[in-house]
Length: 113
Image (cartoon, rainbow, N blue to C red; front, side):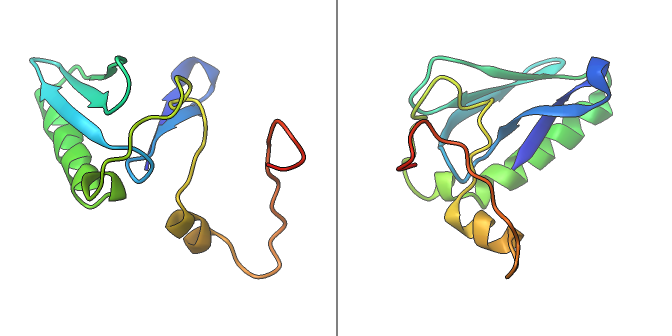
């Protein structure tokens, strides 16, 4: 999972790219940016860099994350347009993060969530 931040707000995470939750159809590396295209949406996520070394680093990081993700093993389309701003985690990630005794808070639109 990759997080992206708002530098103007003190590097507070404002979204995530969770490749275990959806499939990436394609990503294109241009001169100074990487365009990521998840399955099931027309949106494009752009990672812009200033230095060529940064572009190489992000291309390798992206490749390594996508290659081992659940989204690369099966077709997992994006389910809503807010996928970048929702902090969805897979069941495996959930169990790797929590310990016995942790207090977990969930946000939902109904009491059945």
